[in-house]
Amino acid sequence: MPEGHTIHRLARRHNSLFAGHELRQSSPQGRFAASAAHLSGVRFDRVDAYGKHLFYRFAGGRVVHVHLGLYGSFVDGPQPAPEPRGALRWRIEHDDAYADLRGPTACELVDDDAVDRVLARLGPDPLRREASPDEVWRRLSRRSIPVGAALMDQAVLAGVGNVYRAEALHVNGISPLRPAASLSRAEFDALWSTVVTMLKAGVRAGRIVTTVPSDRSRRSGPARVEDAHYVYRRTDLPCRRCGAAIVSSTIAARTAYWCPVCQPGG
DNA sequence: GCTAAATGTTGAT
DNA sequence: TCAACCTTTAGCT
Image (cartoon, rainbow, N blue to C red):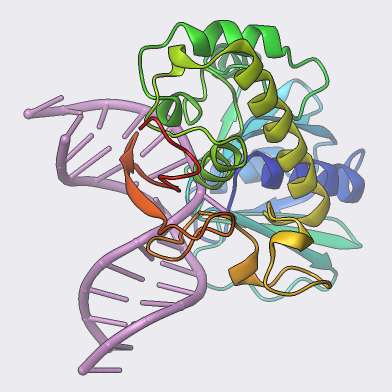
């Protein structure tokens, strides 16, 4: 289940396992079969992550664009790969390892122009070195929509999804209902810093853990599932900071969660 | 076994 | 604003 951290972690993993290899490719489910056959045996150069998009670059300028959507997932492992079962969209493999893709919104063979068109729609990605907070501020501060909607807009910044939206706004005491343009530059800078830190932690951990140990029910050890978030999916449960009941409402077509006391102004 | 929901996006109404 | 799409899983019966 993917926000930007998942995508960047996959890029690192797949570069480490597969970059520079000629890969056997297949699509047991059939929907990517022609392209997989076309690319089978072609050298895989590397994969790049931008926001929630992956671009697998092959020799000859061919690119596979993958977007996991809400349900897509990759799994990998050493050979021998298991017998394909279920809806397996894309399998890539060499003599030592395989990776399987299921359920993506997009898995398509594209050219460089199509890559550019996707990138042109995206705002800066906080996980990329060149990401400019000034540019995100420009894009965010002129929007009249709620900040909870702006954070989910991949044209403002690329990679934040529903969990990081809820958690980053909570940590900064900002209601998702506040107009994006009402944030001060100081509030934005703090929010940006939180988003970068949270996404990086997610890449490292391989899952979203936004709470710090002192805010959890137990003192030490890895965060339990129910301890990993401050507000996400915690409707009616007490806020970890103030005890008020967490509320939820649909913002930008997704369920938003926040503490009405710690995050006033909505 | 069935249903709804899920860390997402697009395109039609 | 809403439905469609892709798949798995949790929570029911």
